[in-house]
Amino acid sequence: MCELFYPPPLQKGGRVALIAPASPPENSDLVSFAAAYIKSLGLVPVMGESCNAAYGYLAGDDDLRARDVNWAFSDESISGVFCLRGGYGIQRILDKIDFEMIKQNPKVFCGYSDVTALHTAINQKSGFITFHTPMPATPGFVRADSYTLNKFKEQIFEPGARSLENPQGYEWRFLTHGKAEGALCGGNLSIIASSMGTPYEMDTRGKIIFIEEVEEQPYKIDRMLNQMRLADKFGQAAGVVFGDFADCIAPEPEKSLDIVQIINNLKLTIPVLYNFRCGHCYPNASLPMGAMAQLNSATNSFDIV
Image 1 (tube, rainbow, N blue to C red):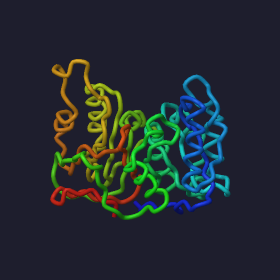
Image 2: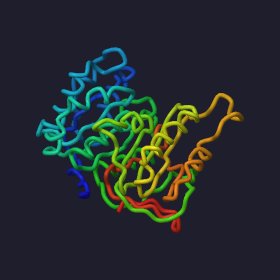
Image 3: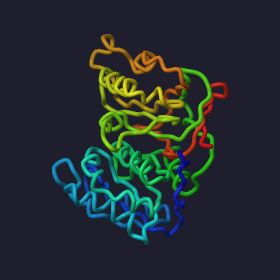
Image 4: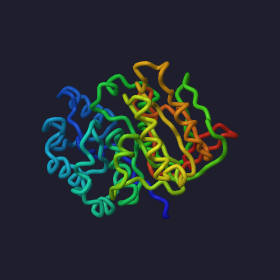
């Protein structure tokens, strides 16, 4: 398997497409905030049709949202593509996206949550690194802290080898020890699980899997992780990084397993890092999906190499 490459980093004055390939932003003020934030970075926001569209819980119908993705990558004047928010809907449009065209037009691509489906598809079908980052038209991003903003800017302007770290006051730990190296894959657990059996299923062979989730009860986390186990996704992988599991709490915790117990019950023999501060949370790290990474419990480290 060939290593993926970084798309050209963003430069001041670059034009950045803002799109909503899944659900619509909650209100127009958040769309305006996203555009203003892009301008504050010295970039030029270019709004896709989906930014101001709505079709039930989707940011416009499937054809419109797919058209926005294809436009953003095919337009030679655009150097980056930022998703405004996640929600739901990207799996509805994967078969409408021209990944061969995207392969010929590599660009900085950012988002997370439902955007996991596009990270996986672009990494595997178009062959370049994408960026798991917070999204600018979400309520949390309006109040984003310096750690979150700095890590985001590092990835879009100066990607490459670096040691990753949690923000001050947040500790990670290795649940299973050892050393592993491989390309990063993964993202939101629900999206990973729902891709199983499709042409867009995540390939974990020799890779380090990153997993995060939000507002799912522990038994559902258990079910999806065991779906991955039974599909041999962990058996084929080199290591696992568990990110944030925001509000993944049972109504009656005393009658439930917690997230660490669920992970330990998988009995993984590869290195497992727990509580990396990345996911539906603030502070929130950014990750280059498809980049080579290394885990080492002896040095308590998680590095992009």
